Image (cartoon, rainbow, N blue to C red; front, side, top):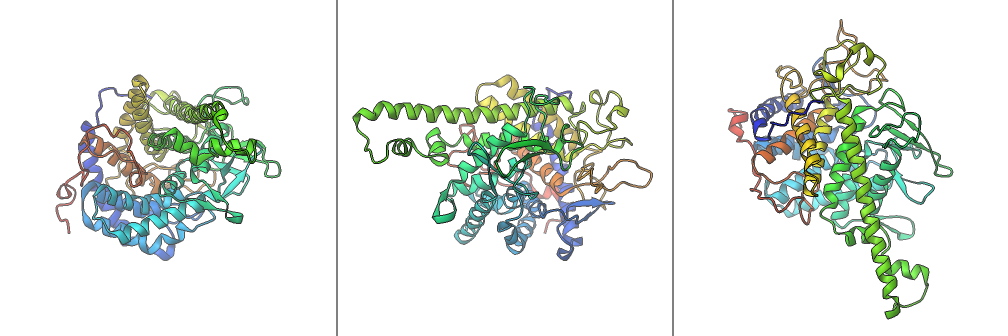
Length: 521
């Protein structure tokens, strides 16, 4: 990838304003044509959104897109649309015990509404706040209950494939656990056992970093630093890891680039989330306190003065453990970010899989702009939108921690990707096409992506997750350009927002609604 060092968030504002103008048309078009009885919109075919059942993981993106549109423009009809559909149609997703997608569906809807209320973007309403908080608490606990214990005593949230399956996607679904934990919620198990949601979040992320991300340490013959396995398989009888796998990528030993993007964004967001928690708070929620550990070692023995040395050693161990968690997350985030930059085309858009079988036919494709109309292998713009947001966040985090060189590199890479996506041929300008971000890929191995007559590879279509993340990326950059409040998934529950020392204006609508739609109603 060739990074443009001259780009700034301010330079992208005209493109972002145009994006949200087109976005308004797309949301209203889907609202007009969508029939709830036909299922959740997932992917476009010939420019029209259709349902493609695998799991119900995209409804939150549909309604969340309207909420992001309101957040960016202040146009109230989009707030009303997103809020009404959330109240009427999202309850089943809150209690859905069969998926790993709570962080997608429920943070995008209930989470955005609670965040905007906290920020003052929408009026405070105690009853509504209680409703949103209850939904988010339940969602986090239901997500955390999908738990597989592995051989070392830790574990992971298993995917819809079953208890043996750890998906890289779930890194971003951890948001539901983080928000529920911050709201003071816990998961209750057998005999009223209290299970910390933060503990499960940290354990799942650490397990993902260990097994789904590669670090060039000769783990297998295809161990390249930053490569990601979509799925890790475990033996549920003894909890031991067995092998990598891929559901939506080409093979277990290549990298499905949307999974790579989920890793970049997931780890970067969790690093930001942890910045607001002290080491003591992390440890207190994530494992027994030093006092509890003492009593486990010496049952019935009371603490005395002679035990202070023991206390200090335990506290030191606590601090070391927290540091180890942070270091593991940073290693995973930077390894995957570097691999993305190395494996994407010059403009920052990746092919759908780094090992796709016909890539060799594309020549020196990594040193050229992505050819989204090539006849051999599709690109995946949705992976680019997801990765770009992760790169912004990782860049900000590293800069804040003193690593300005790498922080700036990741941020500039993100802006370069955004510039590519926010204009043709990726930005959908045709009024009859319901998608916003073109050239997204859903499930290449299953053949679910529409291929137009005369074409050999899918192109020109959109996905709910691609459109949503394009809007979310645009809003994140827009707030940065205008000095607005930093956008986070935990904005409604943050005790200390990331980078709180920066001067931030009240967010309000970032773009005057009249510049989006002169016929605003």
